Length: 387
Image 1 (cartoon, rainbow, N blue to C red):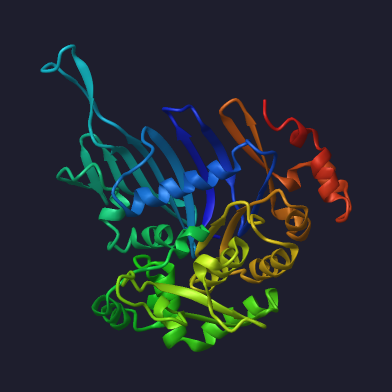
Image 2: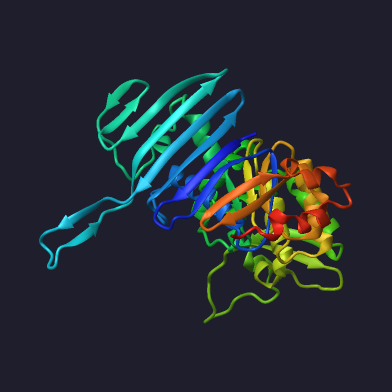
């Protein structure tokens, strides 16, 4: 499994996630307000800290254990904000500098043997026992040394972490020169799957153009969920318009997804699709483009979906045993149809969040499979989840 353990603390706000152990499939359950979404947000912050310039929350710290083949990588970090007193200002005030890494440690554990690969503090960086000159504090050492053999697997996993959102399907406006350039660069299915630069709509276009069997599989599943749909296509909006743009109208021609339905002659483009139809499409494309070992996080998976969507999407998730999923849900169908051994009950005391495996709760161990959802709702830990 990719992520094995994770803890996180926002020192500024006081919000703390106590250590949580993950499996390949994880369904976070619990009352509204306990912190299920915040757990996904925390992992997403760590991902962005590894692969982009620091933005957003600061004065945070974490430790994350990631398993790749037979090697465990532990990345611990403290991301803070430097302060200094500005004497040239009246009255003296604290100047807030740019966010930066104050401390990082990357450890590799193989067969019980632990080796520190990188250690960073305010004095500098030690990489494989060698002290290096100071490097920019705004960039993680995992990002900076991503091409090193000892760090590359950790960096690759962080790049592969996906936080699913239907807003990712915003129509994409690109010129023909850029489009052709990306076609040439993404010249294999593996490269397309590993690509974390291009928007989902553009990747889906290339999937349709060059990897038809994979695209047809998505179409097949989508049309099983929505039987009224007779065709799905990715292309520029102009391809789907009955009336071409004339003088005085916008010349923008973004890439979009369009469907055809029984009894309707015109194409229906993405901004006219229901939120549920669009969300199902995004999830299917994301799963199709996720290489083995990818972490896919889905918040409140039932949002905008009817039971016809939930049953098929749940089956797709259960079949993808080569991916890691962290999902949140309140919906009885999802909770009842994802095996209870994958449930994780989230509770909160003040700002401290604790996650407990369902297998550790005796009441659930004694319940039959048909009773487990009812038992979950009646648990003392569930009813008193916020204290």
